[in-house]
Length: 206
Figure 1 (tube, rainbow, N blue to C red):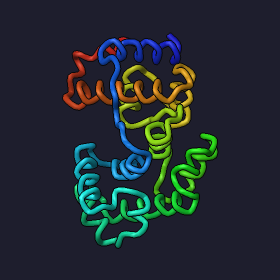
Figure 2 (figure 1 turned 180 degrees about the horizontal axis):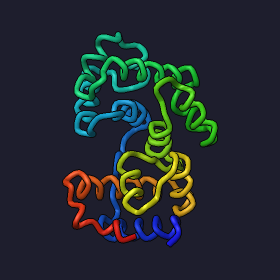
Figure 3 (figure 1 turned 180 degrees about the vertical axis):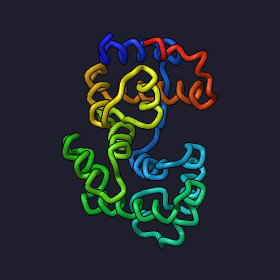
C-alpha cells in the first residue's frame, strides 16, 4: 500500500473504534495558552495549570500580558519548565494583543496566521497547528509524538512537513475532520502505546 492508502486505512480503523469524539473543545484563548503549556508534559498537568490560571483570573492573552511574571510562573508550575513557558506565554499573548485580538487573527488566511504564530519565540509547528486546528477551526493537521510513533509502526517516516502534507492529502479540508483524526490517534496511542500493548496493536500490519 502507498502511504496515503495506509493512512486512509488507519483512519477508518480508528473511526470505527472511537466514533465521534470531542477533543479539546475550548475557546481560542485557552487553546493558545494550553498549546504552549502542553509542550513536553502530560495533558493532566496542563489542565491543572489552566485551572490555576483561571482561579486568579488570567487565563486569557490579555490577562497573561498584564500579569506579573512571578504570578504566572507560580500558577503554571504543574506543567513544568514554568520559567520558559511563562516567557513563551508572554510572547504569544503580546502578539495576539498587538495584532488586534482574537477576532482580528481569526479573519486572517490560514497560511498568514500560521506564519504569524511561527514568528513568535517558542511557537513551533506542532504548537502553531494545534492553535490553528483547535483554536481557530482551521484544517491544519497536528503532527505530535503520538502521530510520529504510529506512523513509524506503519513504516512511514519523514519531516514534520512530510507527515502533515500526507495526512492533509488524505483528510477532507475541514477542521472537524482534522481534529477528529488527531483525537483518534491520541486516544489510540494512549490506549496501546502508553501501556506497551504492542502485541495487540493492529496498526503494525498496515
